[in-house]
Length: 421
Image 1 (cartoon, rainbow, N blue to C red):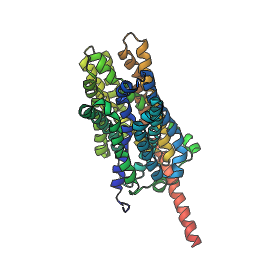
Image 2 (cartoon, rainbow, N blue to C red; image 1 turned 90 degrees about the vertical axis):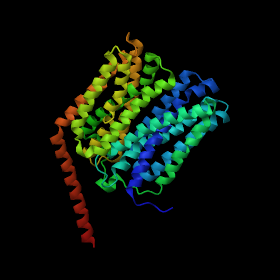
Image 3 (cartoon, helix red, strand yellow; image 1 turned 45 degrees about the horizontal axis):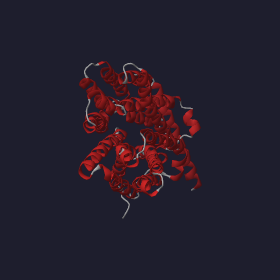
């Protein structure tokens, strides 16, 4: 098979990698009941599998700033898919091959999480390095994660209905075909790097000296916290608050949330050139505050559930919008910038749901009390986005200065080359 020359194939492969990331992260929790029925694993141990997933991803985010540029984007991308394929196959084999089924699940979860962690970091800079992609490409990429989550839930529900819960391992092993195909496909697509497109990237020391990095860090932490604070608890609210069965509750709750979030990101990805992201981020913050507030204060459970689902639309632009604007304003941030922002986002994804759960356990209002406490995240996001908007002129000056330095470096290199000739 010859290498392709069209960067559209590169973008398509990166979008599919977001679907695969959603598959790797969300399929295992959907099989918890099967694990519990077949292996008699406690809920505490099953919950620990989720902790392992996010812990390993945080570790990969932190390490990626150092090793991805050294091994190259293509090697990192293919390796990530290989980890996920091996991990998914192991998920179906090791619980039956090892003396402890739970040990097999832990090993498989770690391997899949390594692949997902690498994908989270490397996919965005690969897309950002595609020549002439236009604004909104990162949002399109991240919309595929949402649709990947929808695909994962639907695939598991349909499979269980057709073939039974007891045959879960064949589902996860069969779905390993998706990362296997995409890993092979990516070997043949063109792959540029940020250094090639935007000049030599900042070192980590130079990056940490940029004060705007910390502002973008606050934005991405609050984006992840706002998103997951609602996403992780909406299923519980649908089941406990409305008395819906698990299948109906997941369809009305998490699927609606993910679908609206995906549609919001898709809209920005398609029409992003006509939208000012610096003006949109504060609006997203206000909308998120509003949906959280309605979900908390409404005495009507149906209205509260609709508000919970609508939060998916409110948070849709927060994460990809922050990545988009960070890439445009810290032009030479390179892979390290995206690795640090992914680390911040995952910290938010951990802190948000934990805050809801902790406050809910103490509040007389239970889950609504926890969601009320989580309003602090979109509030901070709104404040930080306003600060970013007001710093627009000075930041643009810094961006232009970076571009001027880059041009001077290129001119100097050209002059030296001509002199040597």
